[in-house]
Image 1 (cartoon, rainbow, N blue to C red):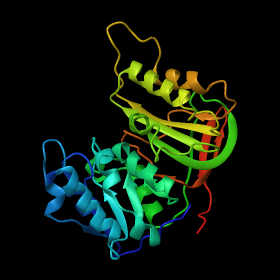
Image 2: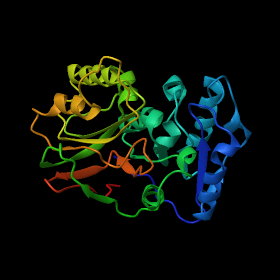
Image 3: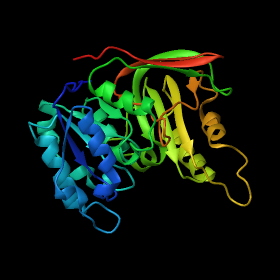
Image 4: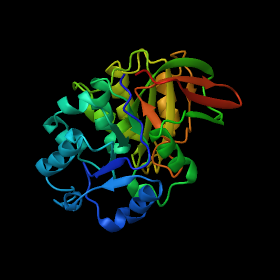
Length: 302
């Protein structure tokens, strides 16, 4: 995996909206935060285009992102929000110039599509909070984002969830939002999960939807050869009047509990205020014990 160049004071961060539309008020706090960190946020009126729920039509959103992928003066690309729509433009994008000089692409949720694309071309990316969330994020989430962009080492130790499965494993970290991964099954950008540490999170889903998606991942072989599993926020889950009978965590555990791999539940990443940065494509060491769990990101390979 190629590691993009790290940022320094004065680096230019392009702001893009590949999915749902956004207003200046939505990200005003984040723009000032980025400036106060010593970086230069780059955007223009195209960021605020609107086409029903989207930030412009497919061609417009793709053109904005393409311009920053190709630009030699942009040092990182930060998706300002998720929603739905990145999968509609991913096949309109060309990464030929980008691959010659990769830059950090940042985001989570719907941005899982971009992470998957970058994994397919061998470039690391940053699963982390987005400007739409900055005003709600805690300092741990924001510091982990900007510290990682600047090249500081990344290592987490958290309290063990009572349902964790103990063990140790190493492998590249891949994954993202369950619903978005499900939407990419069978495509040429679905992440290669063989010998990988898989990360999963989701928001606002019915429990039976989580079960259906996890069944699909299992039946497609995506869980067959993973070395470990990290589960982040499973936020605002819904149930029907007749209960499904399992929590989202239990649904996921049912699919992996017999695979002899470490499983870390309730990791601080995903649709939560404490959304810690994760480097996708980077080799990590996952350790799950009875009292704690750790996720250590190993040295970059340039």
